[in-house]
Length: 308
Ligand code: ZN
Image (cartoon, rainbow, N blue to C red; front, side, top):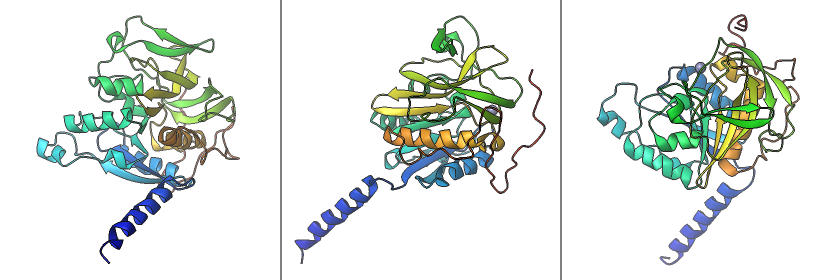
């Protein structure tokens, strides 16, 4: 019997590999949270639902030690990035241990997928590789030394190298998102302009902004420019989808956020959008908001703030 066992093991491994690679099999995704100046404990379940509700993903969550934890607590936090098709960050907090940063950089550089959601782009102002991955970020002392302010002017990507702080937003409001690149798999077939639920409109983001494409933008009342909301980047062999949308659960429950987050995560994981390509019949239009109902989460928490 002995010689048969290795052969059986090999067969079993081949079967597992085949099923992992088969089209239609849920993509394994890891969401990282644990520290944020936003309510990560409320928004992570929405992100998880957004991915799992479309059937294309299976999602696990890894929560870092809380702020101020000793090094021993951090020593026990070592996500196995390589087991996932993409990593989603809902994290904005203390630096990760150096070994984890190195692992993460190697994972994305080596062909992994990364999705940065809203305040994840506030994180790690001093981590050079992370800023290359996200392209642009805000706050945390970011300024002209972090890189140019990136926006869209007359349909073209514009890099403003003048001095100034990186990161700004006015009061939350609903705003129209405009497609700037309709050919990308993430935006293909979506309405040119659609109304996004109450959110912060991130503006004046700065960073190295290399190997970056702006897929959508929205006109900021603060800067009067078209500020990027959805971006894609190449980083080594890996792919990064960066959404600045998603301040709160009610912002994420926008059908437009759900659809673009699903597509962006599939694209980061595989380089294409197949399983999530169908456009829902209730996708928002330029004038009509569309909100996903999820138990325990408000559709709109308060009257929409007046524009500044
Ligand atoms: Zn926010």
